Image (cartoon, rainbow, N blue to C red; front, side):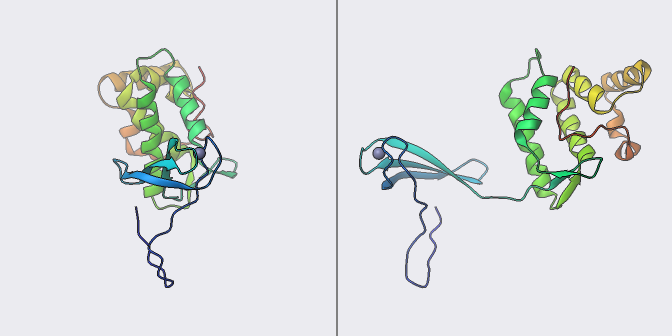
Length: 191
Ligand SMILES: [Zn+2]
């Protein structure tokens, strides 16, 4: 936990947390540790009124760039939307939910680390596809077939061929200028 010295001599700043059991505001921290990635602090607390224990997580608020859709609308990157799109693509595939969450975490992290204020929706979709390709080829093709709006079956087949030979159009530089990506926020892998 960070100790912040103020000019009034206070040793630290502690958020006030309401006990989930009895609603009292006084609790003491019995344990405090940083998450593995160092971005979350987990505090074990004990209510000073009812003595029950609960856990709080403190997370640094970071700025995720706005997603710019094809029609110019801006919206915030929504984890939930990205998750549900990925879950649809992974339907009945041997992909653990935890792995899907890791993909969304990774994408969110990449968006934050990009330092951009705005990012085109197709770039978000390309990131999703890049991760999905490594996880499950079928889920990848499902997502890509919706996202990239393959013009016909030949285009889809050539994508699958390249995928099975270890090369995908996504690795080709011209894919960066792809105009066929549909507008969405990383979702849209509806079968
Ligand atoms: Zn309590």
